[in-house]
Image (cartoon, rainbow, N blue to C red; front, side, top):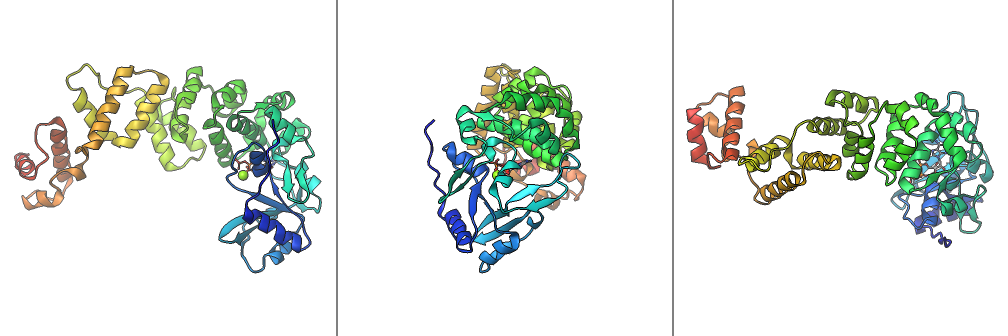
Length: 403
Ligand code: ATP
Ligand code: MG
């Protein structure tokens, strides 16, 4: 691979320059260096420095600073309207519980900071005057497309069990292999994941799941997945790859063998947000509801009822997951998509609030505000979708009176 040039954005250069004028040295570090060497646009830039946090603050005394990360040595500087995290070189103390270092020590030496980082490809730093600092051959591992622990894998996983999932996450997202010693150790130490909080697992596993290599990594490291989630059928793993890179759809594919309650429990264990939980449960449930039959006369109407029940967005996701499992025939899936497109374009009436009458109109003809009113509106919507009445005020009111 040809060596990519590292070109830091002006703001990062300015931050490094500012530190340098204070007598300190700043480096871009970690993921951004890795991404730039791969020719990818980093999504953010972390800066590391030999300046202690109070010294960093002095260098940026004219800027607002956010101190929420101070315990870890991070000062967030609002520099030219952008938040830039500047972290002092650290040497992590002993890890007492496989996840938190017992103490964080600030050091003046970048070598120590890079040694505490997880993988060789993540343990590089760059300063325009110094050049690339790459003590563990991270650049060569990028070229070889390999995730390898910095130092002894058993030790590193024992310090922080989350690194097991992080190795798999980077391999999935970057399309890399996990080097043999690291891979063996990761499986050997899979039980360490039980010490890790659900939030951290969720965040890493989600990235793994929506990565390009999700199927390969989940298959290759199935014992780790089993440790986390129990048995996952192989057809689910294969379907994951055929799903769009959408968090909820892919989780639903992973848990598609469960009923919606059990799938919800898995998501709950991961402390997911409510919207993701809702969609996963719905998609899993939809796996056991066949779509309307395309040869039936009622096909179009049945699809309109489905749209009405689910809304376009959810129904599109239902189609996607069914497609991924190949458990509906192509004609049906295409048929549903066609009806949906047509309905959307025509802005067809699929919801009560699209009816030409509302609660107020019903009240005027003497319907009391009660559940009955909702029921009548629901029935009117049903009849409109059935094509039995026009979505037109007088027609609807007349029907409402009969009801
Ligand atoms: P991304 O592009 O996904 O943000 P990243 O490499 O920046 O990837 P982060 O999780 O943001 O990943 O972490 C930033 C850097 O901090 C990593 O590149 C790595 O050097 C270090 N790091 C993060 N988590 C750990 C950990 N658990 N153990 C050791 N080093 C870590
Ligand atoms: Mg990052």
